[in-house]
Length: 269
Image 1 (tube, rainbow, N blue to C red):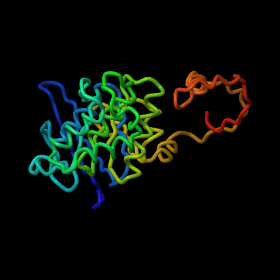
Image 2: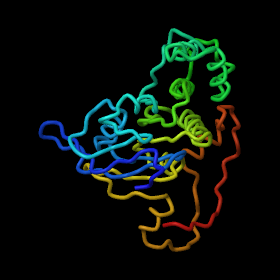
Image 3: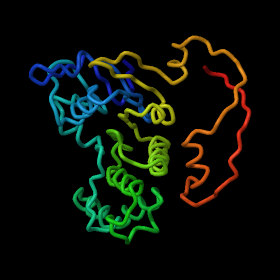
């Protein structure tokens, strides 16, 4: 394992009575990178996140986060991380700014209002700062949830299936927020069951299957596991996602383009 890794996991095991969830999981995460843990429902992704965030004890194996052992130095680990679950943990009665100010005060930060305003600007929520969160879209709520997770500037953030239940436009908003995290030096451990999400965001991707990491590498390295692509010319029809984004645009404004069929070169089977 790399000496400068933000997260190191070795031989992690976990069972619930007769159900074995983790069977010796090994991986490490480089500082300032986005690491995607990919797997189907029930693969054990959330169990790993709960162990790394000190919410659950492993049966065997070791894990360290930001240089601290998750079992022996749990308090230090908690000071180093933030965790965002599958559903936004925001107060819908409060405004977006009030949510941020509340968390900043709970963390005993000076000038909570300034901290909140900075995060609102960073996540493009300034115009909606005074609105109740109940009026926010799904993507706005998730961006606010991530912003709340960054109060106190934790060096690592765990995002457990952050786009579950979001519409295509909201997913793109969250993807942009996650890219911004890594750009600013935050280490991100992302769990997802969406292949395109891992492909779009991750520096490295690990596939968790039946309690084990069966492959771990960059997207380019994973693609090399398949036979070489054959070059052929095909008639490419737009996908439904292409149609959706072409019509509504990334910002939700109606662009209504003329839909055309294009001929393109296909380099992958």
